[in-house]
Amino acid sequence: MTFAAVTALPAPDVCEQARLSRDARFDGLFFTAVLSTGIYCRPVCPAPAPLRRNVRYYPSAAAATAAGFRPCLRCRPELAPGAMAHRLGEALIDRALAMIAEGALIEGSVADLAAKLGVGTRHLHRLFVEKTGVGPKAVHDTHRLLLARQLLNETELPVTAVAEASGFASLRRFNAAFRAACAMAPSQVRRQRATIDEGGLNLRLAFRPPFDWEAVLEFLARRSLPGIDRIRQGSYERVAGTPTAPVWLRVSPVAGRSELRLELHGAGPCALLRLVGRVRRVFDLDADPAAIADTLAQAPELAASLRRRPGLRVPGGWDGFETAVRAVLGQQVSVAGARTLAGRLVAEYGIPCGPTPAGFDALDRLFPNPERLFDAPLERIGLPRARAGTLRALAAAVARGEIDFSAGQQLDDFVGRLTALPGIGPWTAHYVALRALGHPDAFPASDLVLRQVLGNGTPVSAREAELRSEAWRPWRGYATVHLWQLSSTHRAAEPEDPKSCATTP
Image 1 (cartoon, rainbow, N blue to C red):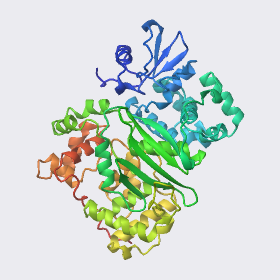
Image 2 (tube, one colour):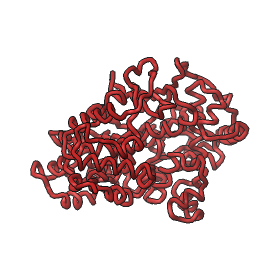
Image 3 (cartoon, helix red, strand yellow):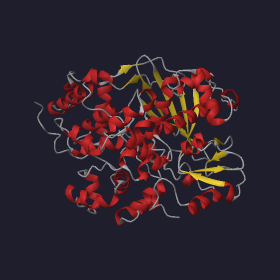
Image 4 (cartoon, rainbow, N blue to C red):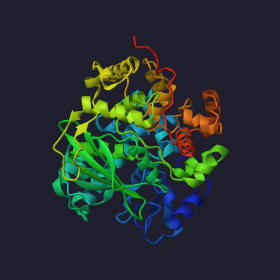
């Protein structure tokens, strides 16, 4: 099977082979609708395979829903990993899908979305139909109804809370939309609910294998901060949210399944959609390893790492501002040194958020927000004056809304805005785009370790690294992670950013 020519939907013979073999690599990349039952399924559905003449293939759950099919109760399409946007070969749709996943249509309209993208509503709708089979509103509606099915199946949240979590202001409208899409009432889906103490809830988050959990955990462990996040017993734990509404979460692998388990404590219904999306981005659960490997395996310098670590993901940062601050702290120092500085910053300016629920002891503070840092005397934590000024300028720009970390931004635009700040150069900007935005093509070409690997120990120039990376588009971010893995030092030190020594005005 080849992924080279895949756009919105794999070829029919590829879909047929994948569904007959229940190939998990295709989970979420297409859906199988069965004419004789009126149901649509994931390629991994354990039910007996229907006859080919009764099967139709759709590029998205939304397209299958629009065609009149209802989701399977057995394979549960709501658990399918997302179809990575960059497979569609249309940058505008990539950005729009990322913005929808982050909740752009919960309060805004399709016209608002089109305006943010700089195109007309009709043009956006046409592109969506061409690439996903339906318009943007249908994609959004199906996404939130499938989330509702998952919450009904896996939690004890009241139906009213499920409706709220799914973005419905009216229970009546939620019930009507759910019946139309699923051919049953929400109350009929309430089965196999987990009982979780102290207001917590568990959710299953699927991914396409392979998935290198150990590599992600190692990366996050080396950057964990006391009071905020930690690795314990093979799981990732963190406190997030706001001082008045903190949320504690735990992410763990599920043995024998292509899934992670997300445990949440203190999460209100309105926060669930974004929390789940954030976790999926941090752990890069919608990545398509086969499509990425199709491009990167052609590069001799990457082939060895792809063979050894085929499930590498891009470990995301939980919060964009936090990731940017920590990238600046990491300029010209080791990862351990950057972690020490970040720990001092949290101790001095972090926001307390106790009391903690059982099992989350010592996770009792949030990372400082921009308002706490834009005029703070940051030199007191041991920062050079210039770098302290860079952090204050960054915090002020974020507080004023000049810099944001929302999904769907064009890479060059984001890099341009960030590098306009004093002390922030291309390395920092691309590193933040990679980890905070989850942009798969971000490439910190001046990265010292990366340049050393490409030069077999003798660093190549940033210009040469940039030129060699052109063949890896649109997956240069994944190439970066593989090159880091190939280094014997494995990111022992963050590289110098040319602008990091700039004097703050």
